[in-house]
Length: 226
Ligand code: CTP
Ligand code: CA
Image 1: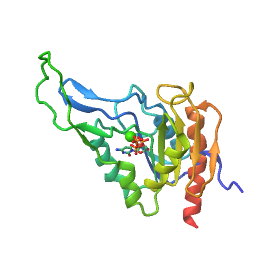
Image 2: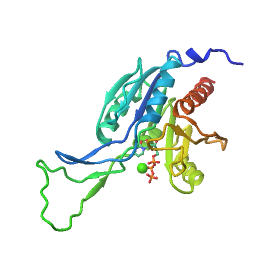
Image 3: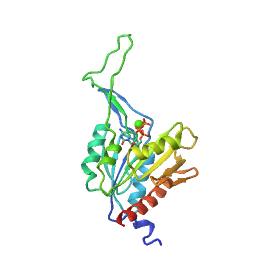
Image 4: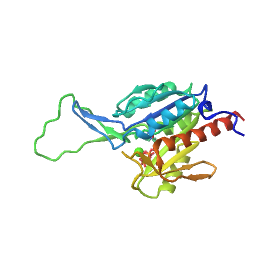
C-alpha cells in the first residue's frame, strides 16, 4: 500500500544528483567537453526536491537555472565533481549520477593560450577517476543510480555497467533515437535492476522520467530499511 503521498515520499532523505557535461581545460581559453545539456539531471533534482528530499545538485556548466529549493554546487572538471560528490557521500541516502563525466582529461594544462604553428598536433589524455564505480565500491546503505547513454548494444552495455559499478538501478537510453538523449526535452529510457527486472518506458518528458525514477528510489529506500 502507498503509505506516503507523492509530495513527501522522500521527506528527511538526503540526496545528491550530478548533472551536465564536465569540461576539461586544455589552456585558459579551451576545453574538451561533450553534448550533455544537463536537462535530465536537473529534472531529477527537481523531482527529488518536490518529493521532499534535501537535494544537492553537483552541476557541471549548463545554461539552466537551479531548481527551486535545491542546493547547487558548481564544478567544471571530472576531478572537481569527484571531490564534491565524495565529500558528501557518507551523509547521503541516495546518489543519482546523471552527469556526462569526461572519461579523459588533457595530461597537461597550458598556462598560456596554445599558439598554432601549422603542424599536426596530438593531445595526450589521461584517464579520469570513474566516480560512480568508486561510489559502488564504497557504498554502505546508499541507494546508487547510474545512467548509461549508448549508441549501440544498449541493453548489453547498460547491464554490464550496472554490474561493474554496483548500482541499484541503471537508467539506459539510446541517444541515437529521435526524442532521446542529448539536448532533447524528452527521453526514451529503460530502468534496469540487478535482479534482472527491466521497465521499458515510452517517450516521455525528462521530468516524467525523473518522477518515475523518484518512485523507484522510494521503493529501493523502503527495501533497504527491511
Ligand atoms: N561516470 C562516472 N565517472 C566517470 C564516468 C562515468 O561517475 N568518470 C558515471 C556516469 O555519470 C553515468 C555512468 O557512470 O552514471 C555511466 O557513464 P558512461 O559514460 O555511460 O559509462 P563509462 O563507464 O564511462 O563507459 P563508456 O563511456 O566507455 O561507455
Ligand atoms: Ca564514459
